[in-house]
Image: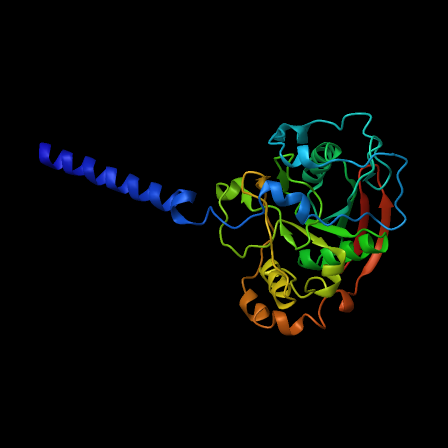
Length: 317
């Protein structure tokens, strides 16, 4: 009896050790990836502001201290209200007054049926971005029709609107993701950057090395060069992998910041059902990129409204 008890204890101990080895990010290799060291981030950034952008400030903004800032914002900000005095223009555009920014960024959100989550996202993001000393504008592209949700096509629509406004940097951003570290600068690097490589849902571990979704920073010129994203993913999984295939086909190389800087909080929600038939579409991803994307984009713009916190583009696909 005592022998059986000891055997069970030993067996349980072995199981626990195996689970720790399998699940711990530093022991299975998934938690590590190549990234730009903090000392090298400034040299990797794409310094460019929007066309016709002007600032009355004399001194340029400095970003070194921000890059080394490990401050973590509280998620509870989503339940509050935006602090007065942020001086955000209608359309969700902000420019720091104390210094001249070196970056102009358009943040593009594909959206449908998540009003409360969007409200919290906007409050949080304006608070987060206010400390980054960048010129930015938030575009929310809402799908109004009853067709299956098409995230990639909505991002194409938002990218076109942002590029018409002269923004040289696009950040393609899911509404359920919030950056936690202030050092995660919302500006483009010289190569496309996967910003959300460390998410709480995945225990801050990168699920696979070629993951390229959630929050992506890419220069407008590069987005044009790859013809944007595919318009074919109505209710299908795989638009992010398709996007990465286009990046590779153009000889671009994805980059990231270190895992601690790249931490995000993902809110749980009921997602729309997606058909897992992506392999059939993905097989032809590189072949389609010349004819499927920005140059084949069709939609009906129902209205564009400049709200106090964002530019609201409403469309039927």
